[in-house]
Image 1 (cartoon, rainbow, N blue to C red):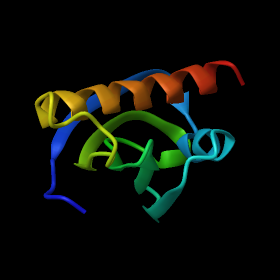
Image 2 (cartoon, helix red, strand yellow):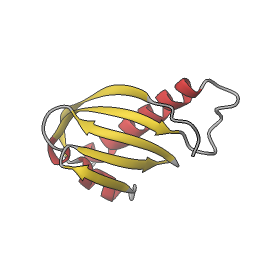
Image 3 (cartoon, rainbow, N blue to C red):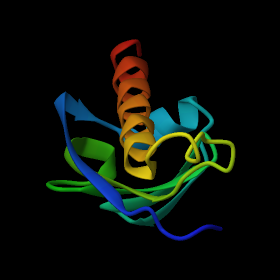
Length: 102
C-alpha cells in the first residue's frame, strides 16, 4: 500500500439508499465496521464510507474518504487529489444509478 491519500467529499443522495444492498448488487467488496461505517474496495482503491445521519441501510448523507488509490491509477501523470476526487465521483454515480434502477 502506498501512502494515504486522504481526500474526503460529502455526498447527499436524493432519497435514502441501502448502500449495503447496492454494494452487494454491484459485487463490490466491503467491510461493515459498524451500522454507520464501511471500508469499501472500489476499482482497486480503498474508500471509507461513513453515514452523516442514519445507518448504511438508510443512507441519505455520507462522507467518503479515499484512503488509497488503485495501483493502476494514473497518479504519476495527474495529481493524486484529482484522481481521488474522480474515484469518489464514479463511486457515487454507481451507487445512485444502481439504487435508482432497482
